[in-house]
Length: 461
Ligand code: UDP
Image (cartoon, rainbow, N blue to C red; front, side, top):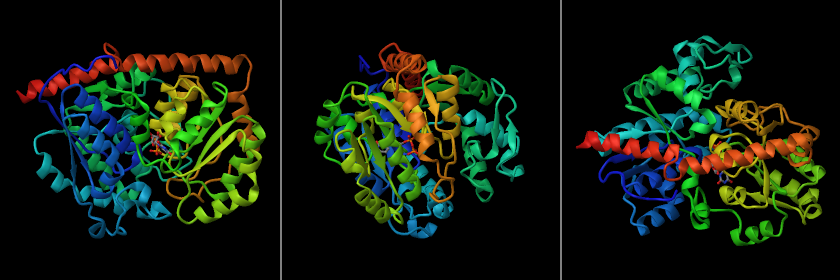
């Protein structure tokens, strides 16, 4: 972004993220983006989530941005959740079993939320809603019980066939159909939708979604580009599990575009067998790597033991870094040494890879990640699919293990030489430039945000 001129002085936005890092992080970015454009922002959180974004809260206060962080008690006990489960990543494993209670607790925030924010726009960022909306309208979530059934999605901008198990929205099982209905009702009442994407990558889908809902859709991303310097990048999300300066020195010592960054976001936790396969593949592929490992509480000790006993870290000491816990992801991805990204295709990670101009090995697990892979591999042509079994959300033992040979092959294809790999790199580089332009003054997302603020400013007057 080049200018921060206020577009309006008192449009007021209340931002209510789902309590999960993949939602909180971009909504925090959105809060900054709006406030830098002169809007007043109220950001809803809960006590433990507020602690996790404390650095961000302090920074917003110090910079004088008009962002109020309001913390509402999260009703763990009333919803049947263990104390302290205020975030999806804090649910005990298998977290899938606790999802209905977590959603109930979120739903119970409704009354205190409306007391806090009556009459103001509540914005939740959405993407690929068109597909989920069509599937809902067609009654698919209730009708189809066989996960392998192939759906022909009607009314999509191009023919689209997806197995039920890979369709967005299926994280909410049949028992949570009442919640899906509530979400759809809320969407029907909304004035429009703000979407964390940019026109260069999916204008055709945005346009058709806009037509379908008959309301304005504002593309306002990639929001991760709101983080301009290292301090902002490090403060994003949780506290890093590493000494950041030490890792930066390590990255500085690596050749440009030589390192593959491997991470599966904030929620995917792999089983031990799968972790062993990934480790062996990274060793065999021979490229420098940064590998972020997250495990559920049940498996942490086993994974640590394997890491210690396998000798992998010792053998790859000169070219490999393993991070157990939270990594400063966008800092690593935007470092000149980064040359590729093995990702689970969470939408934030996908955008962050795009913004850094990186080609990606795609390995989706659940929810919209399967559709995001399609965008990366088939539409943008900047990805290599690892292909293979993926666990269900919240249960690391539910998928089939992807073997090391497959992973190694995909990594070599991405990071190695050859015409195809170079062309993929070039496309990724160009997209990275387009993403930056979209968020700069005069860029499509920058302008959309200004218009969004103006619209609500006009209505407020
Ligand atoms: N993230 C991070 N460090 C980590 C893991 C995740 O900074 O060790 C950030 C990542 O940059 C992204 C978000 O957490 O912004 C994860 O969101 P995404 O949509 O990619 O996946 P989810 O966690 O929702 O599956």
